[in-house]
Length: 201
Image (cartoon, rainbow, N blue to C red; front, top):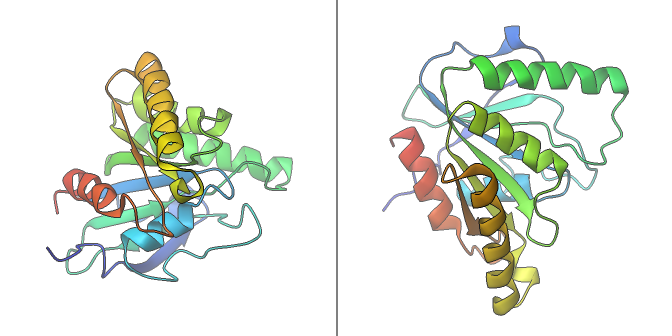
């Protein structure tokens, strides 16, 4: 089957709500802490090497970055700013907090959230905050445990079961989990399937 994400292309970057595209169509947001592998995951899903910029400097994404999916005109992937230990001034953090809060509360086009977590360091405060945004609105969320190739098969399975168990206790059935590696392409088809379902592609 042809990959519906292979034609994804950069559309715009929004630094405040006024710069967002019209609130129509379907979009899926990607969130992840700095260095969790979010850009690599987006690139692997879209079969492109440089769609999302992979940075050695954590916290480079400072806007909501939109990618459209030709030939459709109303389907989008949205890359959220990666936080964690990004050295970001407090006032900028406050601006982002307010922007992201508002985005999750009121964005009608939002159909689901992908939270990218390093399999070796899952469910940090930021991840929980993002999952909380989706769950409080009743949106489905999908956790991608990246860098799975860094662990052996048994350790991968154990890590996934532990995350799944914890998330089920906290969020019920609203959050699904999978293993992923941009390096070995493990789990890429599974992730595409989830996204295509949400975007009705």
